[in-house]
Amino acid sequence: MKNIREIALEEHHDFVGAKMGMWLFLLTELILFTGMFLLYSMYRIRYAVDFHNAAMELDVVIGTINTLVLLTSSLTVALGIEALKRRNRKLAKWMVMLTVLFALTFLVNKYFEWSAKIHHGIFPGADELLSRSQGEIIYFNLYYAMTGLHGLHVLIGMGILLWVYFLIARKPSEKVVVASPNVAVLQGAKLVATKGEQEAWVFEEIGDDVSEVEVIVKKDPQKAGIDLPNIIKLENAGLYWHLVDIIWIFLFPLFYLIT
Amino acid sequence: MSHHSHEEVHGVGYGILVLIWLGLVVLTGITVVVSGVHIPAIAVLVALLIAATKSTLVVNYFMHLKYESRIFKIILIMGIVTIAIFIGLTFFDVLFR
Image 1 (spheres, each protein chain N blue to C red):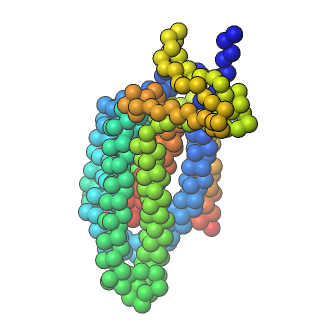
Image 2: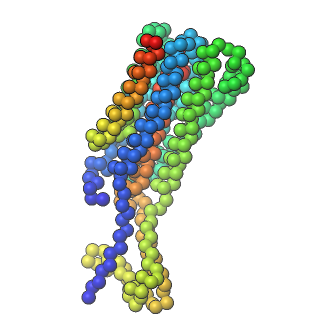
């Protein structure tokens, strides 16, 4: 009698739900930044001239470079998702790593930008800044608060992308362990792997002394099928990353280009 | 996982993504150049219009929203309407106080 016991290797996922959850989270992020943009708008209406003068001190070149860095990082993460969907794991890994490097570039630029300002005594609470007009003080406080919160998002996004990189890079394998007391059903039996009708591989008889049987399925990453669990993780990381880009798309003209 | 049909798994295509990126770079160039021209009345409007156009491109193509099912679009529109109400009411209050 042929007695076949099926062991499910498949995990269960809800990809649409996962993505929807991410979109809902992004909306709360949008509302968070809207509050800050509103604050900016109201003070800009009241202190138009001061805002104009203060903005002259920001470096448009660094701002433009950082805009291009973030736009390009958005492209690379989108290309990474596309590559993973097309089972090109190698390209996906490269693209995600490039995105992480662009994120780092952005943060390094931001570090130099902030350091230069702080060196000139322009930071919240500094005597030099407090000696200026009310509107300029507010402009720079908002500048630090908004680019700071945005920078924090860049840092978090970078961490998430790095985590997804290691998930993609890991050799996919699935493990099934049959331990006592269930192992009794396997004692005195042979493990057989079949490929269609063919017996591909037969293992020696499992004796009474065996207390645990472990079956590990290892896949060749290049030949493995579509990697849905990691695709959704990369897609959600990408969605977060694109939001960070969109926030900057608005921050850039409002802080750097109002001269 | 049989309900995951083929068109869902396949994405936008590398070419379109690169093209969108090119568009975004050009728009960035335009917004920087336009800010140098002194027309204060429309400067903010033009800057925000360009930023909105760039965001639309990012959302539709990079974030794949154009190819998602309708419920995702409804969720985003609801969010944008909510935010528009916040902004609208605040401006109304400050400008006509």
